[in-house]
Amino acid sequence: MDDTSAILDRLRQLVPGASLDVASSTDMPTLTLDRDHLIDVLRVLRDDPALQFAFLVDVTAVDYLPAEPRFELVYHLACLGAAYATGPAAPARRLRLKVRLPAGEPRIASVTPVYPTAGWPEREVFDLFGIHFEGHADLRRILMPDDWEGYPLRKDYPVQIRKTAQSWSPLQLTAEEFAQNIRGEHDRAVADAETQLRKPRD
Image (cartoon, rainbow, N blue to C red):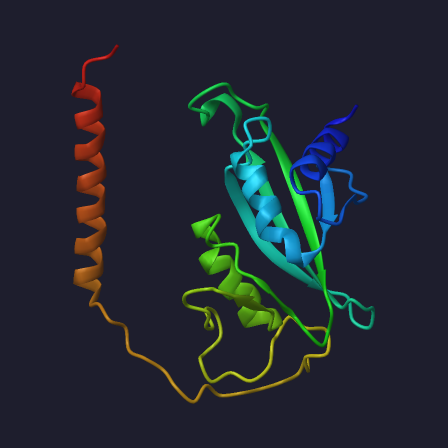
């Protein structure tokens, strides 16, 4: 049984209501699933001792206009193997999940309760595709100005648009303050490393 089939069988066993299937891929195991079971599936992928996909690598999206469902969310996960495990390690590997969303209802649950690091990637997808992540604590634009109209990575977005931002904010730090912050971070990192080196080894 190949790795994709083993992962799929495990998920079907632990999340029996989920609609899961294998998607064609040349680089890593790839599964499709329905949006209603995304959180349940991710919790199993993260917590099950046989899977241990504890690292969310990225969240992105695709616009397949004029196809329907129009949007596809793509989640890249990784199991880091023995480098991460606190008990018996699952094999190091990667996994891609895909969820299709209809044009008229581009919304899905935020995965931040499972992977807190999804916060900024979800904001980027919201900003550029207009996909809403329900339950996200701070869902607002991250690349475009707050008053920008439209979603630049949608296929129906006008390519030649020219727009002057209506709002701006000055740099909050002076160059000297920024340099001081960087030096402070560096000094703290060096001090932490030296502390670790001084600790007795088992």
